[in-house]
Amino acid sequence: MPMTVAAVPCLSDNYAWLLRSPDGRLAVCDPGEATPVLAAIEAAGGPLEAILLTHHHGDHVAGVAEIVARTGAKVIGATADAARLPPLDIAVKPGDVFDACGTPVRVLASDGHTRGHVAFHIPDSGILLCGDTLFSLGCGRLLEGTAEEMFASLRAIAALPAETLVCCGHEYSESNARFALTVEPENQALQAQAARIAALRAKGEATVPTSLGDELAANPFLRAPDVATLARIRAAKDTFR
Image 1 (cartoon, rainbow, N blue to C red):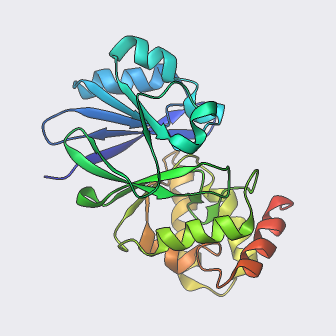
Image 2 (image 1 turned 180 degrees about the vertical axis):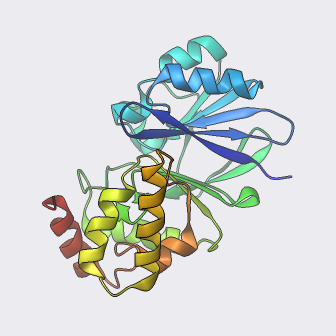
């Protein structure tokens, strides 16, 4: 049986991701707030073994210290970002494969939003924990990295199986859809995804995870054919209201 994944809402619009192995062991990715994550761990009923960190921003790591104190979980993050992350028990680099709750996890380079950002791909379960690199119908701001780095990161994600679940760090889908429709207004897959997102948000429900196949059909950043196009639409999104 594969791992399962569930979104844990944190702060104003963040998601941590709670992973559960078939035998009930738990891991969490990017706990930006301790209280809701600890509540989700308690509800899930298993021991928390690992905390996976995609990058150093406070809204992705602020809950780590309290969660470690309560659970003793091991913290896993990128060697390249270690100086800015909470203390790591296991430092990894792109290309590494490590074990989380008995399941292999592959580390992907994911620079662009920040330097040293990584994503975690769990092939056996079809799960991608991508932090702030790829969003539903969007991608992360280029705060430290370049358009070239983001393009490379998105190309690596695009090569994964279409059924992969995209587990991103924020609930940005509704505003991303509004912008995406200005880039590709005639894209029927995008129109359908925007309508689905609007219906979910009207009910107060999460719009993620999304599937990589849906993103390949509708996300203008993932669909950008070259670095120049990605840079142009990313700059336009930065000033979009």
